[in-house]
Image (cartoon, rainbow, N blue to C red; front, side):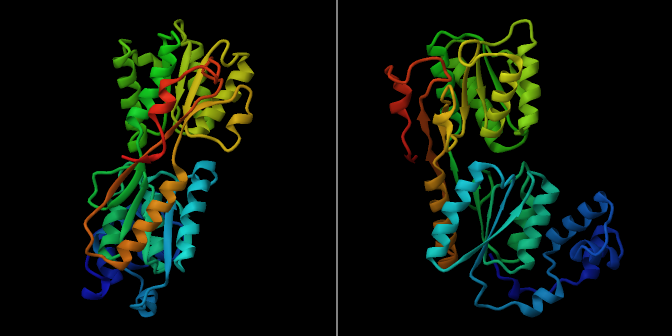
Length: 355
């Protein structure tokens, strides 16, 4: 990537012409001095990403030595999964003398571009990004400024450094487990459409059904939108179906909480009426009654690996692009409907480590 100092500065008027708006409108979007229509803001942000525009105040204050600050753009920072990830990233960066600046992308393409633009105006040296369904605008904007990006949590076809956890075979392992207990009507509540993790876990669900000689039934795959409320609605729809499932795979921790609450409210006993397994572990998952059988992502290793990628990229920009996939761990507890003292081949097939 070329540094921003190798190009002539882009004027605000160029952004305005490309977006088809006035210079004052661009100024309002950049400086947040006045609200503009959502479609206008999208057009301006897209033009900023395409041109690589940086506000004059930032250009004047840029230093070649950098700020020793790394930006982290993720969604739902209140999610305990991301909280653990952030902790491990921050600890590794702090040891190297770097500070961490957090922004929330809300898993939305426009908000993601805004978040990355905000980080760039604060002159971060690099960006860690949990990408949306289409991170191309954000990645292009960072590239225009010569700021390296490392993708975290979700894999992408983009030619940038990235670290993620394996999702396909690990989800299939959850299906294997409940199928091995005799369940044939196995449902799934999937996450936010378009995210690589959502698509991979759906693929894994279908693969698990296939290798257990079970048919895929589209009515047993319901989107929960990666939220508690969405999972509650999906759970209700599944439980009200005439051929309700006897086992359920839930694709992330927030949705698992939603399912647990919905099951309690509906009087559905787990695992008596419904075997439940999910993706993402909780710090207190073993304290639930029943304890939750889940796939635990390697958040400590992922955070450490991502931060190390950033540091080595900053030290040597000529390094080849690295794509690391980490292996999760199967956590066998009681919500699946079997005793944790029983032998479980799935447990030994998944141990934290690098693929």
